Structures are given as structure tokens and as C-alpha cells.
Image 1 (cartoon, helix red, strand yellow):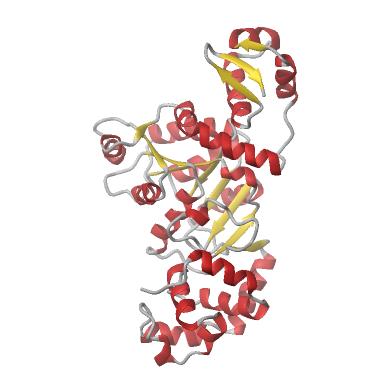
Image 2: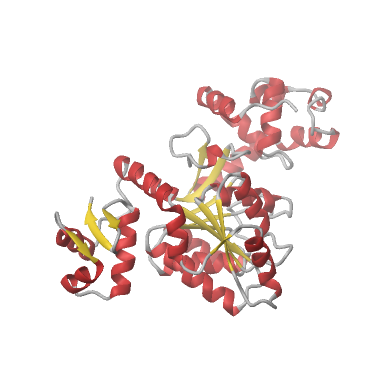
Length: 381
């Protein structure tokens, strides 16, 4: 089926004036039109304004557009609907990030079906390229919640942004763990950002927006329909260097995120659970099929280290990290100076707990301030 390539869309959108951009947003406000169908319509008609000016018979010539959707285009792609959408965005501090904008996440541009426009509340930062997705069962057990706290919290503590879907169970636990450990977190929603789903996570969503971002490719008032969740999951994996699954049944929706991750060439990690636990059967199947077993945050860091360091170097060269180094981190770097020191020497000279020092060294290594050498030795970069 003919559809505009993503790169072609980016080039076109960069040239559009306000009239064309408004027309394209009107298209996205129509129920049933997403990234694929929008690009197909553009390929057929040439521009958003021409799509809106097309007759019903012309619209139905486009594969995927039946009479019902053609009628919806006429009734829903209106000035009034667009004005209401933009008013909600202003009122709720939501901004639109187009695929052609400089702050569009570069990792999303690489996935098979990139979102064309993102609705974002909060802030996406360059350092969010250093992200790990954490997903799993909505019916999480105490074991699963405990492992999520340990792993997601550990990853956040060493500088990774935690990405998940704000769902009940593992998703919410991952977001909360990141916040508790002073990290950043991104929630990708299947519905619009006007009404948080599930509703009991409203306060959590507020906290995420203040220390990360809420992200959706759906207009503000779009309801959380079942078909939107699989498409949402491709964004969760697309924003991340790797996907970690903590508890998943054989038919868990988290496995859809895994499928997207594999298609995108991302590493997949799984946490083993009790052998008789139904909500761990999906994780066990993943491990049998080649997923990497995750027992600690360090397991994940070791695998993504090189790619994370590359991205951290680019990020650090072009943008400041989210905060200045702590006093203890400054002291650690000064202690190293031009020397190469063993871990035990650093413990003695800095008078810090070994566990705290290990986390600090990993964070600084991730950000390319220090380098780990054989023999558990470190030097300043």
C-alpha cells in the first residue's frame, strides 16, 4: 500500500505553514486515523488541506478508508474541534512535538511506525535517551512489586530514565520506584492526556509530569480503547535502550512490548519468578527463547553500557545533564585526580558506604566522567 515514508513526512511537515499544520491536526482528531493511515492519505492527496477538501468517493479510494471513516472525516475534522483541542493543550500545559521538531526523540524516528505528532506534558530531555522500559503484569504479586522497586529503583539511581505505561501493577511500581530514587520517568499513555487512565493514577501522573513527562500520540480527549494499547507499546520500547519484563503471564500485554522491542532491535530482559506462578510464566518463556535474565540493575547496565556511554557522550557534549554533580561526586572525581585507584582505596579515602560508592561510580561511568578498569580500578576521564 502506498504511504508517505516517515522521512518524506518530516521533510513535508518542515515546509508546512500554519494552515497545513492545522489541517493535519484535524486529521489526527478523527477517530480511526493514526500514523499509518495519515501517511497513506498524504501520499494519495499530497497535502492535509487536499485531504480535507476531498469528496467522500475520493477518500474511499485510499486503502483503509471506508464510507464510515470518510463520513467521520467530514464530521470530525472541524475548526471547532481543533480549537477545543488547542484550548485543552494550553490549559493543561501540554505541548505538541512534531516529528520534524528538533526535540523529537531521535530513537522514535528509527522505529518501524514512528508517531507523527506527540502530545507531551512535562519535559523530554536529551538525557532521556538513556532509558530503560520496565513493563509487566497489571495483577502484580508482592514478589513482582518488590523486584520492580529494586530493579527500576536501581536503574534510576545510576542515571537511567524509566519508561512505562502508567498501568496498574508493575508499570505504576516502576514509575514510583524511579521517583523515589530521585530519577526521571516517562509514562506513555494509549489515551489522550486530558483524562488520566486508570483514574486512580492521577496523582502519580502529576508527579511524573513534574519529574519527567506524560506522552501520548492520541489527541487530548481520546478514550482508552483496547486497540490503542498495542500501538502505545511500540512507543514505550522505542523510547528505550532495552525492555525489562517483571512478571508476565503467557498472554500478557507486556509481551506485545517485547515483540515491538525485538522488531526494533532492542535487548529484552526478564525477571524469573516462582516456577508455579502464573504471572511469571511469560517471563520464563522469554528466558527460554533467549531473553536475558535480569537479577540486578547491574546486569542490565553491563549489556547496554557501550550504547549508553555513546549516547551519554553525545548528550554531555551538546547539553548539560539534568543537574550538577553532587558534592560527593565532585569529591570522588577530585580524589581520583590523575590517579588510578582501586575500589577499596576509594572507600577508605572518601569514607562512604561501599554500596553507595558502587552506585555513584556506575552513574559517573554511565555519564563518562570515570572509567572502570580491570581489577576493580577506576580512573578519571
